[in-house]
Amino acid sequence: MEIKYKPEELTKLPRSVDYKNGKVYMIDQRLLPKEFKIVEFTKVEDVATAIKNMTVRGAPAIGAAAAFGLALYAETTKAKTKEEFFEGFEKAYETLKNTRPTAVNLFWALNRIKKLVEENRESSLEEIKKLIVEEAKKIANEDVEANLRMGHYGAEVLPEGNLLTHCNAGSLATVHLGTVGAVVRVMHKEGILKLLWLDETRPVLQGARLSAWEYSYDGLNVKLIADNAAAFVMQQGMVDAIIVGADRIVANGDFANKIGTYMLAVLAKEHGIPFFTVAPLSTIDMNLKSGREIPIEERSPEEVLTCGGCRIAPDVPVYNPAFDVTPHRYLTGIITDRGIVWPPFKRNLKKLFSSL
Ligand code: MRU
View 1 (spheres, rainbow, N blue to C red):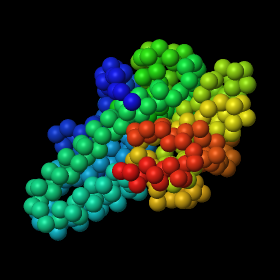
View 2 (view 1 turned 45 degrees about the vertical axis):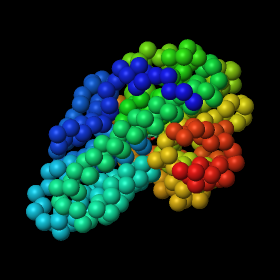
View 3 (view 1 turned 180 degrees about the horizontal axis):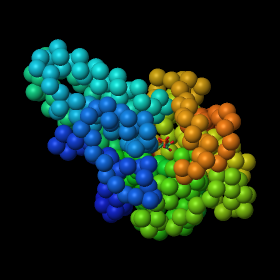
View 4 (view 1 turned 60 degrees about the horizontal axis):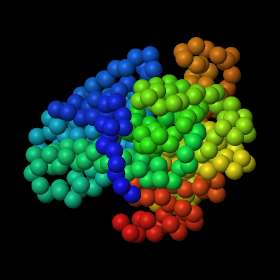
């Protein structure tokens, strides 16, 4: 695989999450598409709240945001002794960890920094602080590189024509470019993406609000559909492949992604349409054997009872799982930053991780 394009040749968007001079910056995704606003944070608790309330969302983006939360702690703590520092670090780690349960990137990023701190316990306080900030920045930069690689790998295997995606696995869901976002941007650049169908993705509308905004901003040819139109467009032969992100892929290839993904996977099989997920290695959790073990976040009933701030249903009980699990048998392949993983997924994922 040859990297043909730089990130700035693929998108005009800035990074969705960043860290500079002791402040965490995020594009406030709750306001889009009405308003584009970058918000800044100077407290760990506020970064945790921003992850919970989806100011920042998308698996790799929340991983980077959590890492920056720890960097923020390191640069702003008033701890005078190493003991005080480690105590405060543990508290910051727990606060950031207890935000959203499904996307493994959050835990992956936090644990990567925690391990580094543990390995360097004997270093000076100043040295430990510096290491934390550098590691958080490295996590973010690596995410951009991983997306660029996935974008080029994906463009080599996806068919020319019309793709369909769900939710937002674009630049906004990562540090920059996106997972699906990188693939469709490279394909657009190569002139092989005719049309990108976007599911609106109720109840939070990441497809309608975020994907429609970011892909049209970069000049891609998009068409928005209500979620329940997906089967019809497939039946009409208007979809050549489906491409979605992932919040957690486990050792046998089962994966969690935005609620509604499983439904699309079953439909894709019925219509003989290739179905891919795109995710960096930081989204792969080899500690879990099957998708049944993935914790699924349940969010507030308000998300279902309202739409765009308007009440659309009477006060009835609501079940609002934010993710579902797609069994690996529906997957054509997994596009990673280390190449494509084909079936049998259990064997090939194991092979990939043991080759690292
Ligand atoms: O609840 P969200 O908006 O954080 O869910 C996001 C998704 O499900 C994305 O598809 C997934 O995180 C992949 S992002 C590259």
